[in-house]
Image (cartoon, rainbow, N blue to C red; front, side):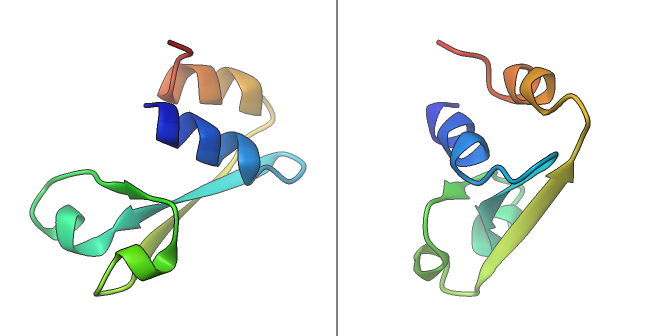
Length: 65
């Protein structure tokens, strides 16, 4: 969860943010968050989120430890 929270915070722009998922893991039903596109041999899945309450959404998705 720490990696997801950091990515959501680092990639913020206005009311939006994004993170990357490993495509190979996703095809097997496993969520693998990656820092860099090169970490996914098949290419990453980019998940973009737009929300007026981005802080609340971040806390819900990846609560502080």
